[in-house]
Amino acid sequence: MDTLPSQILENTVNELSKLPGIGKRTALRFALHLLKQPKSDVENLASALTRLVTEIKYCQKCHCISDSDLCPTCSNPNRNQSIICVVENIQDVMAIENTRQFGGLYHVLGGVISPIDGIGINDLSIADLLERVEKEDIKEVILALPTTMEGDTTNFYLHKQLQKYDVSVSTIARGIAIGDNLEYADEITLGRSILNRVPFENVFKSNR
Image 1 (cartoon, rainbow, N blue to C red):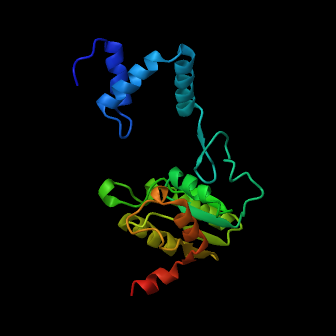
Image 2 (cartoon, rainbow, N blue to C red):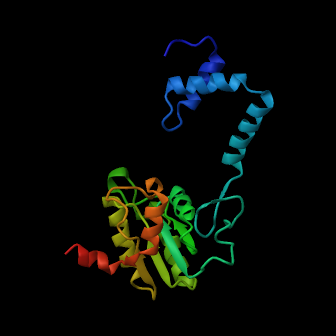
Image 3 (cartoon, rainbow, N blue to C red):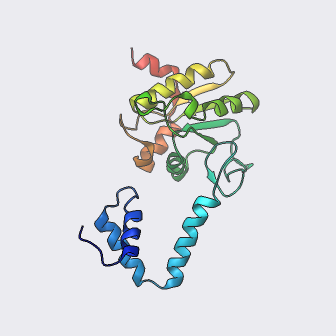
């Protein structure tokens, strides 16, 4: 990209280009667009971004993002408090909620076990999940992790750890293509995968 006429503009472009999928030229278009907007609109955007990083919280129970210590899902008495759906990230919670097919609780691991990426068991909220199963009246844990090698590795580890508790362990039906992330699945397929979940033990049988 050519040298810009303003250091302030260049700094803005450099910061915007750090966003996923945003190159320098797209960042420049964004910056120039913002310059044309009313000052109040840009200030509102800046305020929203500041609040995003300074005020947003993570739910003390499920680790989803929230405006308070408990997210709206965990604090909703109308949700099924006996079922926990385990997901990789916050985007997966949003994807499943959009299907309107699940009425239980969630637990966000914050990733999946991936030694090649330096992500181990202690880097995820697995201990918190096991503590919830032990202390809360949980009847079923749904493993809704990506259908990838890392996701399956995490599934197997969690299943092994959960065997010590009196809880049913199921996994979403494989309507999701192998290698797909939940956030990219269409709502109908994802919704059916939740409704048609199967006991995790059946995964072993199907792989024999």
